Amino acid sequence: MGIKKGMTKVKVLIVGSGGREHAIAASVAKSKKVDEIYCAPGNAGIGMIAQCVPIGAMEFDKIVAFAKEKEIDLTIVGMDDPLVGGLVDELEKAGLRAFGPRKNAAILEGSKAFSKDLMKKYHIPTAAYETFDTSDAALAYLETAQFPIVLKADGLALGKGVLICKDLEEAKEGVKTIMLDKQFGSAGNRLVIEEFMTGREVSVLSYVDGKTIKTMTSAQDHKRAGDGDTGLNTGGMGTFSPSPFYTKEVDDFCKKHIYQATVDAMASEGREFKGIIFFGLMLTEKGPRVLEYNARFGDPEAQVVLPRMKNDIIEVMEACIDGHLDEIDLQFEENAAVCVVLASEGYPVKYEKGFVINGLEKFEGQDAYFCFHAGTKKTDQGIVTNGGRVLGITAKGKNLKEARENAYAAAKWVDFENKYMRHDIGKAIDEA
Ligand code: AMP
Ligand code: GLY
Image (cartoon, rainbow, N blue to C red):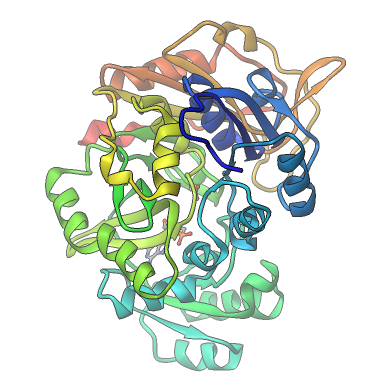
């Protein structure tokens, strides 16, 4: 199988069901090379531009069988769990083409202990750390540590396995939560204890073909649930792109010490990385440091980055798979975008679902406004809320200020019971 030379139209399957996958699907739908788009399992919004199939992202056998049956030319795996679990390997074993890292490379996101050891070995700037396999060893270490300190569950924990502890007492409680109570499941079998850093955070997403890396325009997420960065950590309440804090100087530093160094380190370890590397960076007084790696597009970073990309996404992804990304001239629009997440009141803890969403039609035919669905479902009553994060309202503008005004204006176009959003997405740009 595969994309045959001279064949212009391809059939694409996207794996995932969030706002990120909707943004990917929207980019794929714009591609001149695409014939049919499927999504497993998708959501109500994705269903407007793709055929959704009721197969879960972790049902590897069913995904492979579906891709074979439909003669899918390219499967794009959007989510971390199936990547870390080896879905790309399974697809390739069946002779199918897939975009995303194989299991042995997705470990860059799947194990924080792995990624920290990699950075240490290859001198990639990051916070100092120690790794622990037992709670006793972790507790003994904490007795002599400096505070605040950061505890990280080793494995995938829906972005929630990081605890910032202000003193010894909190840290001891944190070790219990992660390693003994197993609040994040087996992700907490190992623990990384890390130096606390301060500075502004920036996300940089990149395409990688195993050798070459091309970074996309920068973005910034807002992880806390409440205005002014208060409340609990969430999957992300909104984003803006580009980040005015990601200066040429920062970019030069990261190009020299972080981006290519990471790709080369993975290759040296026999873990060739093809797909997306998401660099979570902190701009500290001592310079940029890697906070974390992800092996996929960010959510909601994808919702502000992809709408600004000028290239045909299928061409770029094919270049990553085939190892000729160096031939691609990656280009982004010279504008800005802001995404405001509309969530269900109570997210990320407890919230109700099943409320009808009104006003979605206002986004039809718009090209500077996007309504990316995250937790939505189509029912006989119409499209209803079906998750904590419900929609991502993205708007473009000539600059960040205008994009923010547009996004907040468009956030009013839709309505549903218990609608909740932050009101300060992109406020930091006023300080820039
Ligand atoms: P991570 O999942 O590793 O990105 O961590 C989630 C969030 O925790 C980050 O976005 C930061 O806000 C914070 N964080 C992680 N590591 C550190 C650190 N070493 N120092 C300060 N904050 C951190
Ligand atoms: N927005 C952060 C992430 O996707 O992990």
